Amino acid sequence: MDWRSLLGVVAGGLFGTGLRLGIDLALPHADDEFPVATLLINTVGAFVLAVLVARLWPTAQQWTKALLGSGLLGSFTTYSAFAVSIASLVASEEWPLALAYLVATMVLGLGAALLGLRAGRRAADGAES
Image (spheres, one colour):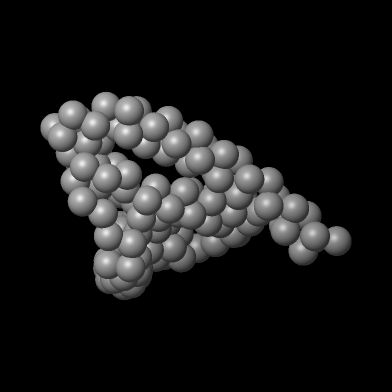
């Protein structure tokens, strides 16, 4: 990894983490409640990353991919928050909410990624015309 990519990850990570914290503070939830903020963050992140991969990645420099992908969106979205939310719901014996959150995360995340790829490809096709 070159120094520009490393700096890109750091800069993107600072912004993505701050953005994530802001949304978490705006949409708080207890351990035994449905984690709306984490679901929203991960769904939006999946969509945005997919748009970037389809539209920007083919021509982007490595440091740009590091800044936006690993840095910004990697720190904005998180598997660990997803796992902790499910574990907390299970520990609180909120099995239906845990299952609903698991299914919603998979369906919305994959759906957002597919829509993002489609949107990114359309934008790329339009830019080439």
